[in-house]
Image (cartoon, rainbow over the protein chains, first blue to last red):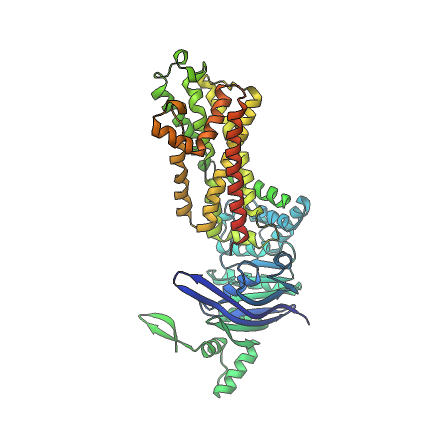
Length: 266
Length: 252
């Protein structure tokens, strides 16, 4: 099966007054067509920067990336036609209705006015927002915004969908709704590249995943393979969780300080 | 690219229509200045003994300054920076449209808004016995000139918004042009200003836009004056649009 996303030594360095910051340091990835691929890491690990490079929103310092066979640096417009993007913040125009946002998005992807109307209707039904279609998005709940954001990433039926922390800030019920949407989108043939900090989310959704820390991929495989590897290597008697894998490969541990659980470098 | 500019322009107009509270001060403040300035200085400059009024009242002399003030609104840049901060701008950047469409759409909407506001202000000024001496064609030129200024000014603020990505910085940048607006021959023609003010006004490009507008209101079609005004406004638009396009093509 061909790869939907590939990166070869992908690197991003931000230059600031305080000096250069290497946010992503030579990431190599291969995401297979049709899979849900999870990209995990702690805050500041380089997840979002990697997604922004893959979605043409941030320039690549060095290395190469392709999406659906298109080099994102050499042909960004070609790549944009192939991808859908829902970023960490559900970026929506608060002064437009849900329907207007979807129609606008469709027209920017080249649909005629009539085609945009039809597509918006289909997507509103898909994410169960038909009843709220005429309301300004500023009146939407967090979960509704997420669903609309997902729908707007699908207007042009992308081959690869990038979801950057799609459930951050959502209540458990809304999170389950988004998971269902992601599964439904993937079942329709779209490759999903998903970043998350929630390990149970990765466990529930992803067929394969990579863990990034400090800008480098520190582990990669199926959730079960990663757990099996840890169990064998540490000679554990109980089945480890994905959280155990995460703490092991990132060299972190959790400790309780003044009633709060903090993640610290071991 | 044209289609994307039109689609995004349409959206920006819808946005403006839905936020009248943002546009009302843009109309009321220039009207306020028109009323106050005329109230303060009309008796000093009576129509029959003030040659530069060309037989009209002082309101006709003041109208161009109010039109320029009305055309200097920065709401499009503030919406842009809000979009950048809220993440929607990235959503638009992920679409396969020409990068410059994302800023030009807003500028098209600014031009349309300016046409409407200039028309309303000129309409209100008729109540002050103002007559457009250059006739209907002159009125159209006045509307186009104000729209060009509005696009240039909004372009400047959008450039600041794209560069700083900060609402506070964009808001503050709006103040940069106010000294320039008031360093024009605001109350009397340039030749009646004190020598230092005359030099300052001569060096200030905004002066030539005000003088072109004033010529259209008070005199007939005085092409040399009108031509300089359009040239200055045109250069302003070209420079600001070029800065917007360049900034967008390097936006990371």
